[in-house]
Image (cartoon, rainbow, N blue to C red; front, side):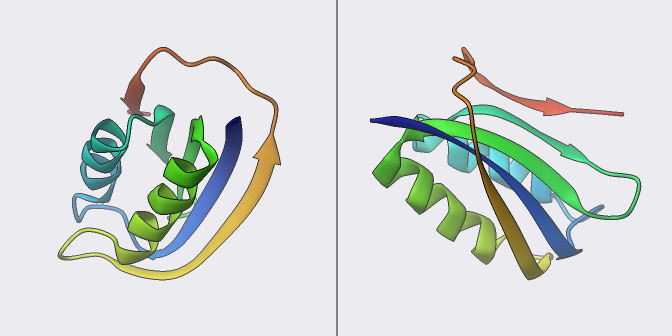
Length: 91
């Protein structure tokens, strides 16, 4: 079953390769959606995929990139958007 989740990641997650890390993990796990920096210093990602792969993706997001530090992740379930790929959105 395909699910959609939007996650908001707090910590040291900007300027440390976190978005690229998320994109690489998404590609490995066949997750679609997007990731972007927010003005408040958090990173938001919308992820879609099989339940097990989304769960694994969230675990990867907790781990983060080498130089990042994840303090907290808020997760909201959403409606399926049928994303075709996974993009890094730059503001």
